[in-house]
Image (cartoon, rainbow, N blue to C red; front, side):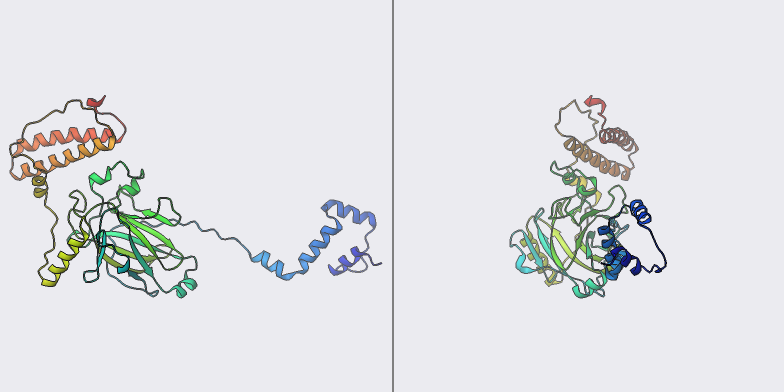
Amino acid sequence: MQDPQANMFKKAGFDDTIFLSDEDFKNINGDINLSLADMGVMENFLQNEDTLEAASKFQPQFELFIPVSPSGPPESKSFPGTLNFVVEIKGTETDKKKYLYSARLNRIYVNMGVNFPVHFSWDAAKQVLLYPTGLYVRATVVFSDQSQAEKRVERCLQHIHEPNNPGSETIVKHVLRSARDLGTDGLYYCGQPDRPDSWLSVLLHLSAPAGHAYQFVCKNSCSSGINRRNIAIIFTLEDSHGTILGRQSVGVRSCSCPKRDLSRDEKEEGKGKRKMKQPQSETHKKLKIEVLENDEEIVTLPKIPIKGIKTVMTGLEVMQRMMELSASEAAKRKDQKEVDEYKSCLTSLGTTIDNIKKGLKPPSMQ
């Protein structure tokens, strides 16, 4: 019977003249701690070129995705790009009372808090070749009018301080939300609220063309937010590095009566007499909140128990805003005495607001 050890050494290319005694072989075998069975496995592995090639080529790739948060207002010009990016609102999915779409105006009319589906399509075959791991769709709300385009769209003070808001500051100021739960894989809220030049957007990862539902959490009529200015959603198709591959936009009105507003806007558009609504001036805001003409008395608030920090902050910020408007009017009248009084009150109120934000109680609350 032929010695299997000898066969193995011949296959490995050793010269026939090389001789190892049993003692030598035992020493070698003991040093590397391999049995004959183990050597047989190694022999088969080395002879299998496919296994060796696969083992040497396989290197797991792990890429950590970090979403991009664009700075400054986004471009609004639509283009399909090489992947033929298309945004579609399907009329069959609208609701007569809560959600409508005007193809004539390319505008969505929707109640606040109501989900509305948007469908995204592109050349899927080309995407698989160029971007096999999928693409990203970013939704950014912007002011449509050129005169307002440099301003970031944010929620109003009232809705920012609602008790059911998510805790994250990054999300609270977004007027547009995904219908999916927070923390869902592939869903990102981008933008830095403390940086005015950082635009707020919702980024969604899609492995193939699909639809997605969104909702607005503020209304066009909110005076300290959108303030009746025209808005639109800019949808961009992007790769994992934030490179824009396509862009489309659609107008939006978040309102209480979608059907009424749609009918009115289409009629006015048909007549060719539609007037663009201008944002309320600072003076109009003051009149709307009914500041009395002879309201010059300085009042020191008594110690009043109020439940909820958000409620306190909302009230204080509204008072701050009203005094800022009144101070502006006093400056226009060149009434320096009133300006100085408002300045003193605003300084005190601003300090109180800052202390509450820092977790400190103002003197009247201690």
